[in-house]
Image (cartoon, rainbow, N blue to C red; front, side, top):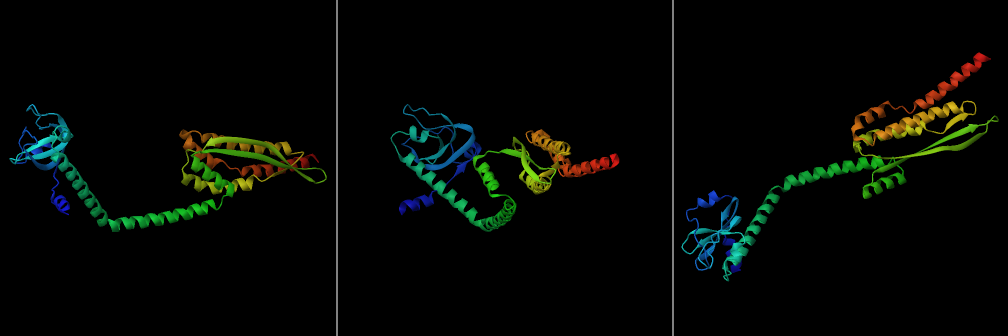
Length: 297
């Protein structure tokens, strides 16, 4: 208990410049310090400029090693002098009083720093709790948005996105399969799978907000306008060429994803790309063919 009382009485004094040390009335420049005249530890210093240690060596000369941090020691005669960094332990001989005082001083300094930090945390408790409540509310809103977003995706897609996040792999493989249904002269349908084309790119220039804002509309367009195309033997080639032209437009857009410099061009391209025009052109093509047939008849 007496040791704890002694520590509680220990005063912590930290000096940030040599001018502060010089201003002390008891301080004397180049005052030798030895085990014979050491009384107690007075404080510590941390300065930008280097100051010289005043520990007296066995030959009577001063250590004079330069230090940016160290200790201020009080001698028996009341004068204060400088002890540099580790010189307090390495060059003070067999006398352990200074080393013991250093240990007690540092422990008390750290204890008081923790008390100050704890007091500041307690004083800011209400402010921090309010901030945490706001963050919690924001997280709940974000959680709801994510749940709404992922609810529109399939299980395999969500699993793939989670794998990409976990492995930090952002390559996306886009697979396009062209399907068509041929109708013979008897009116029977014969569905078949056409060309299968793949393309891989990195989705690295669009923010999540931009992707989320556009993803639903793009998915709706794909579902609406890329349903299996019904063609006939007579007009099949023309309709197929139109579908491939649309796919090439999509490929051109995907190429832009690989270059951050083309971000603006990419966004403009996404606005200008009208996938649904393929079906309009298909209907226009059929009407033109009917008009030609009526004209020849």
